[in-house]
Image 1: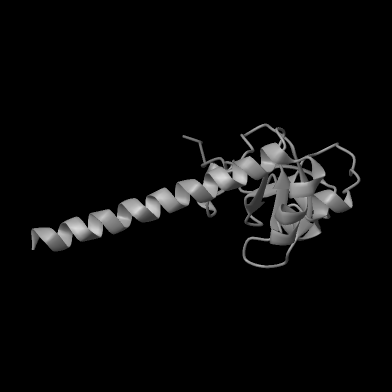
Image 2: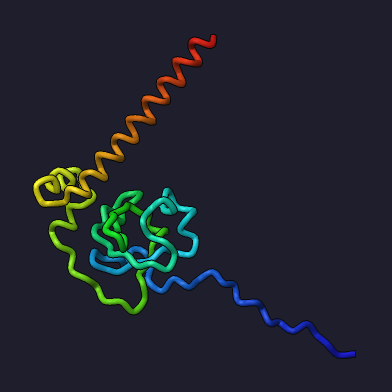
Length: 146
């Protein structure tokens, strides 16, 4: 009887990332990595799997990449959450876009006709304030219950 075990090792499917995250440059078109949801709040951002965003900034910190989504919303992603979209050219990043994630950028948007963006920001702040208020109420209720 023959039949030594064939050593056809099933190719370990680890790779697939052609460009290491370190090589991303502002203007690059990026997409979510396969395991993006494991990194920070990437799943809450504007990009959906298969969609392409534009890298605006690399802040070189724990959540460095400011990415502009397809509907104009910018979001910070951890470096493992996004990768270069293959075959797409690098785009220009305007000064305005570069300022997007910074607080001065938000403020400068007030006079630049970005009222909708500003309202969005105010809405979010308002939402946070409401949450904060609810938390305080919740705390008071607990105290009263004691």
